[in-house]
Length: 366
Ligand SMILES: NC(=O)c1ccc[n+]([C@@H]2O[C@H](COP(=O)([O-])OP(=O)(O)OC[C@H]3O[C@@H](n4cnc5c(N)ncnc54)[C@H](O)[C@@H]3O)[C@@H](O)[C@H]2O)c1
Image (tube, rainbow, N blue to C red; front, side, top):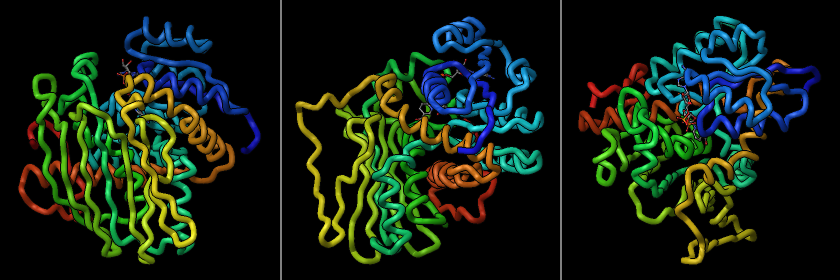
């Protein structure tokens, strides 16, 4: 890590912000100097819990504190206004996933960050799992060969209270999507990190289980094509009664298969399947003895170590002037796939991702 002290503020003091506070406070050279939330009582409470010196009710007050960087933990449709405000003030930003809820917003954020010359990173902490990095390395060094086939499986359980507890969840205007936008975007990010540039997508979204509480999708199936000629499928739901976690699998040009499985959800991903000759692993993770339907707070807590690694990478990127591990442009790619699936489900057509820079995900487009 570079030398110097980075004064950081946290924007949005809800569920995931605790991971940010804990992660930032573990990184040498980083001082968490303030936080903000329109719910001032929540902001103060969060500051007291995490030993943060100043608590505010608005982003402007936090940015005026003279922070070098901020992390963004607001609902997704609010990411853009915070990133634009930070860029305008010359403040570096690490924003939670998804980067935004429509591709045009992501483009405005990337352009504003470029113009301001700030470091702009987006949180996809699962990329820091050693098992995920092992697959990426094996693709890059030829051990697996270029991926020919990919598979994303996100089979999750969410109780109805998950959606009813926060008014913004499950609504097109305040959440921008359902299981694809909020949960599977992590594995879609990993898929395209492994396989490369996606060129088209077709798919279907449905609301089968949580329709009494949400208007966005709780289930989706899709097919993605890539510039390399590879293809992949995506299956995602939050409507399962038993949580099977998340899995990303690739088959390489050598024929070898590699997967990274997160089970139970929120635990570190492992290479459940690895069939490079001489290094065969074939896991059997599921057992009735494993408590699979964890609370979301427990899921988030299990990811803190990897938030820490990404925060550390971001702080080093700011202090040394290099690009962060996951840039705004990297994060735009997974959003484009998600937005493309919504568009495909609405129109019944295959969506060309290279020709669709302004996909939107408002209620009117459903
Ligand atoms: N990386 C991960 O694994 C992970 C996990 C959970 C959530 N997230 C992401 O983090 C973001 C927040 O999710 P959450 O579960 O913490 O939501 P949450 O509802 O628990 O918290 C959001 C907070 O943002 C505050 N807020 C709203 N508008 C604001 C504004 N203009 N300025 C400052 N604060 C504002 C809300 O009052 C609330 O306290 C989402 O984008 C979500 O996708 C990422």
